[in-house]
Amino acid sequence: MKVLVLNCGSSSLKYQLIDMSDETLLAKGLVERIGLDGARIKHVKVGSEPFIKETHIPNHDVAVKLVVDALQDPQHGVVKDLSELSAVGHRVVHGGEKFTRSVLVDQEVLKGIEEVIPLAPLHNPANLMGIKAVMHALPGTPNVAVFDTAFHQTMPAHAYMYGIPYEHYEKDRVRRYGFHGTSHFYVAHRVAEAMGRPIEELKIVTCHLGNGSSITAVSGGKSVDTSLGYGTTEGILMGTRSGNLDPSVMIYLMEKYGDPKVVSDVVHKKSGVCGISGVSSDMRDVEEAMEKGDQRCKLAFDMLCYGIKKYIGAYAAAMGGIDAIVFTAGIGENSDLVREAVCKDLEFLGVKFDPSKNKVRGKEAELTTPDSKVKVYVIPTNEELVIARDTKELALKG
Ligand code: ADP
Image (tube, rainbow, N blue to C red; front, side, top):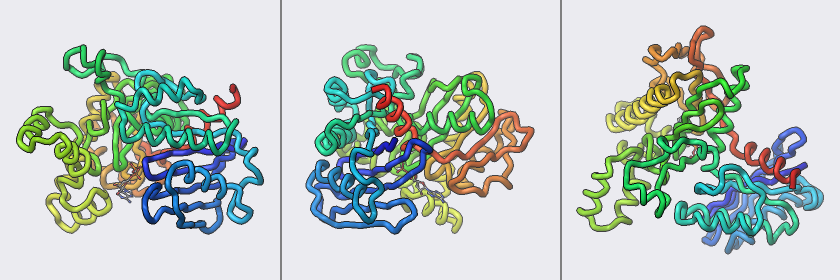
């Protein structure tokens, strides 16, 4: 059974084709600049040179058609005909409170995804366009929607509510939703496997540190708290997003500059590691400048690591202990400097960090001594595989 996984943005579309008989990746690619000048598809058949084609791509229908053509192309394709594509899994950013797990797409589900557009106005419309484009290109093929928010729907109310009048929850659906759910789910399960223990008996803090970042408390395999909230700016410092901010700062800036759009740009696009360092949103640049003595880069680095450490402490307290800490995504998988800064001085929690194991990049590794009570791991995330597994399961149930 071959499953196509799609991650559709407003002007881009990432895809992977996975053979689910042994979960191997057959092909992957990216369609960029949909609806813009210079649009192109980059398609890679595993083990071969990339195929790149620049062409006019006015919309997602054309983008999906290009993907489907690339997959069955005689030279760089991986299937003989489209009947080999058994199902398509779609990453959908927001499922609101309606979707607590992945679902087979039907008219009712499309309506549900549409209903939560106000909660994710940039992402959900693009995700919907992707699903509809596949329905046109591959009629009869089952589509499955996998939500970034679903894993966090197990949070108790005392963790997801904000302390504002209850009516804003009832009327406006303002609450913590959390994101990166498929990633937190994947690495939490993977670390339990690596530790050889059932996830049901573990308390894990998963640190997904990319351009967008979030930290999750996973107790007994369930998300019980997470650092991203209603939108995608809460929690720790991110590439360009602020992380936790006193609401009074927003009010002050709004009154001073008189325009919510300006302030929205500040907290989404100009803040975080980028805003503090003044150098870059990319941790590699920031670490390089820091090592040459740049003080603002050092400050951004320290703020990030301090923030992560605080969440680990808070979630250890919230869960009544902790068995494992996991680092994942671009920074978590690659930055030994961040991991060391976060994990040093955590002996009081039972973490015996071993710096000699910490030089790994992008591969699974345990970073603690054998007698460490709390284990620290690097686990490369694989959101596409989670989407493909859910898609296979739901499509087979049909
Ligand atoms: P996204 O949230 O866009 O999926 P990624 O998970 O790809 O992001 O993470 C991107 C981040 O990972 C960037 O800040 C990048 O600098 C950082 N990163 C990648 N490689 C390294 C590295 N070797 N050292 C430090 N940071 C790295």
